[in-house]
Figure (tube, rainbow, N blue to C red):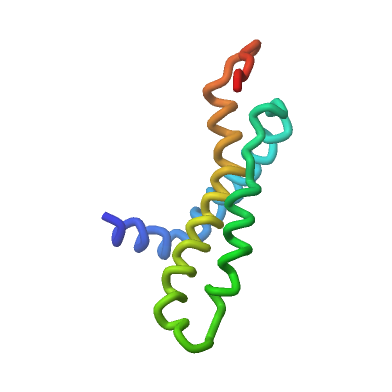
Length: 104
């Protein structure tokens, strides 16, 4: 299944690029209209990503065992930042109704 998705993305690069641009544009527009209470907190994954970055780019002794894990964690955190900043506001726009109050 994943192999077919990757093959499609490689064949239809322009379509994938346009979808990414549309998601970013929709997220930016939705983020501007979202109430301040619903803003995603991006500090924890950003701090963890910056803290693991030296491990992900290290070349010293013992880095052969730690580097792959750090790369996977940093990539996951970066994708979480992207989803939290661009996709969550779009989902909020789709689900929230006028007059809804976010209760924390």
